[in-house]
Image 1 (cartoon, rainbow, N blue to C red):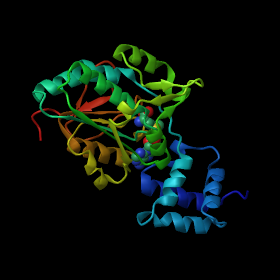
Image 2: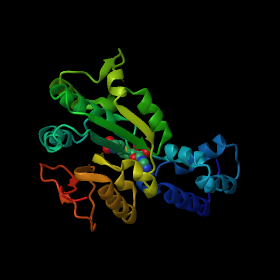
Image 3: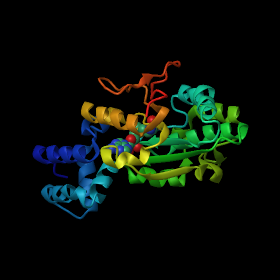
Image 4: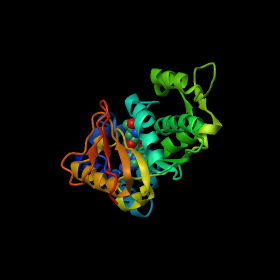
Length: 284
Ligand SMILES: C[S@@+](CC[C@H](N)C(=O)[O-])C[C@H]1O[C@@H](n2cnc3c(N)ncnc32)[C@H](O)[C@@H]1O
């Protein structure tokens, strides 16, 4: 395998950033050449310049770009990551939301950058538990990711140890129902009841206009994704999430993420170490 020339890597880095907002060095530093060569082989091209021509087409056909991003990104996730956020939903946000809306309006939840679905199914379990206690509580859950392979895995919804870890068992015990059935290898297949609660779709957070699908949300989970992006895109997303949230709606970020330098009047949620921003009520 011939190492790629710097000018080719630089151009690919630029294209990945322009399509997805991803800063290459933040998602991967290992085997970048090899991963790009794998993709060139997959698309039947020998010269890097020809592969770049295919990538440059992403406005009309994003297949090559999507596959490259799937190859480059590591999509680490697990059930009930940052459990205090789920605790906040159950203890504070859900009771407040349904009381404020007199149990008449369905709560709309988004998992934006959902990886292979662990986050979305954790939300589905949380909502189902709440609904079992309060049958009048209606809700919908949408989940999206730029990586098509992740979406296939999310639809399949079979998880191994890396995704299951110890937090899931604590919530299964609390909720009184299981995520799904386990086989003798310890893999868990998510129950059909939970699977039908999550609508999965392709989502590119770099395409700000395309994010109108988030409009009318009450909860947006966008965790451990902003770390890949530059300051400008993070600020655009803060603005867009603010517009898309209903009053009282909350955006949840990952533990090492924040919206700094934003002009939107988000309130910081003051509940343990929750990393969440709330749109004040009484604002449209
Ligand atoms: C580290 S995972 C985080 C998964 C989950 N939110 C969590 O916190 O466990 C980051 C996910 O963001 C997705 N991602 C990266 N850039 C994206 C973009 N521009 N639009 C949508 N998803 C993106 C990746 O494909 C990956 O699945």
